[in-house]
Image (cartoon, rainbow, N blue to C red; front, side, top):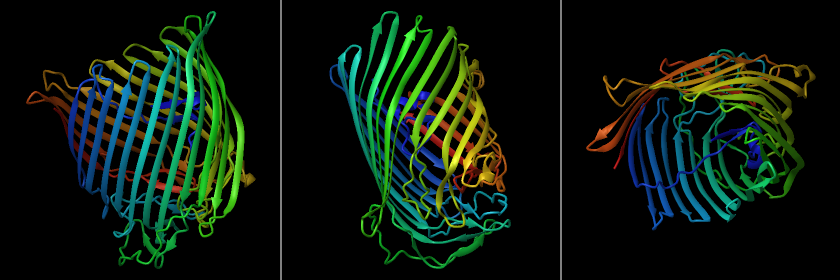
Length: 564
């Protein structure tokens, strides 16, 4: 689920995110009917993918549910010298009674990458060179990133009355990673770079808890849907100073060299705590429905506190602290002049704290939180088979930047992003489905440490973004069950630096695919074939905070799923 606008009023601002919205991941739950699904897949150059999805419900009223998902992926990628080993397992248990509902989710994920690509840095004042062939790998074949993540989440809901529900939830994740390699710094327009090799272990423990009450009550002609929530988030980060291994490698983006393998033998893999973060908040909101639900008014607020601490990895003593607190209001209104048309407006605030990237020398530094604000107005039109949306918005928030010369991350000022967005989704013609939109953006630095940067374009904000996906079902007379799919993505140019002297060009990609749904021995069978970046376009995908990320090379994806 992508929740935008004042949704952060009750969900809370993500620990390192913006107030513009929340991406809510919904765990799979057991279906009413049994499911056994096996999927086999292939991705270029030589990755083999296997997955299972098993679902069952038990009990007289099918009140008990179990769902298991497992996947394993292994093999070479389209990028030279790179291979991926990926495995995941997720178990979802749930109970749904007359008044009580409960769920427990357990998960494990492992990802090992050989010769992993990292984001790049560009030296100050250097014009960003053209993107290299995306299949070239500038990292050494012996570099690696190994990671594993364990997670647990549980949730309980109880209906005190038909219109009043009490709930609580708790979650925990334990993430470990070892990285052996370097972050490239491009130092001239020819694409020459320096690659300092280092060993960096990391350990992150996240815990979160929530309790709340939601309900419905009527006061005369007004129907209230209200909610109360208390949320806490605790994080301990162990990211010691990187340990350098050997001399810096110098090479070029377009013809990278390989050097003799290096070893981590004798290096410490200890991960003492280097920083901690605590988010606490209390929220209340009420959505009032008037005039037969033709007018919806939401008012509320969230008190937030954000404490960030940094620690000396050798002594464990606290070396820095930042404590911030604020009350963040939120309001919204939806008006339906006609049944199919909704007009809306909202305003929301929240505390956000920019976090340094992992390759910053002050990666564990504590930065004070600052208030971010978003205002949005828009309209949504339901034409039955097609939905249209329009939104105009303005977001003001702090921004951080990684200095490519010193690798010091700093919160340099504030930026204001304003723009409009048009969206479309639905089936305008039987057999043709579309989903996508276009955004016109204007990002401006409104505060900066260097006053000359005020009024300049904010880093990493393109003027235009377009995403359009479509499906076409071939007529049954030709081949029933066959669908053509396609997606176009366009992103305008973006500035890399605060002074607007370094810029990456605009780019566009085309993805094409086929999906064929049929029966095999009376069992549902779905075959898929997709090609990402069909034209093989080489491009820098995005920039921001002083880092540069390259795009995805042409990749072929094949899969077959069967239910039995």
